Length: 128
Image (tube, rainbow, N blue to C red; front, side):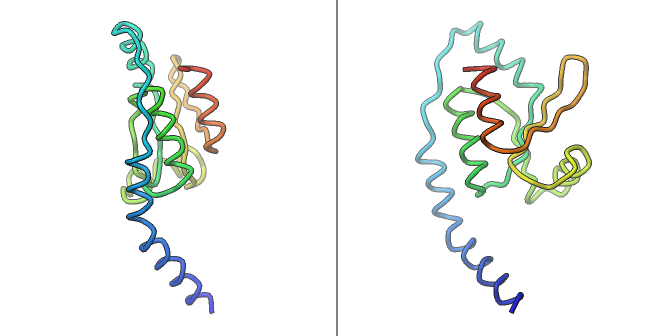
């Protein structure tokens, strides 16, 4: 029974995946326009951030849309298909759950932020 349930959900994900990717692409909001100096400052701050994500995760899509709306060039790390990123997420954050924002402070200390709502609030407060 358990195998049957797993097969059902895998099949469902395979069927829905193209629609999720299309929706993610078509629904991407226009980016915020900043002065060149302000955008350069944002770019340098975003160099300290990395988003661990799954391509078709709806919560990851929400975070990527907010990144697009705020014009944030945050590094994306695919924790689903890249074993190295998946292992880094497990070792650093303690669990393989996406989305997860890796925040490196000015002092080099790393913070791992899970939950799409928390990540979106953090990005809005810091860059909005």
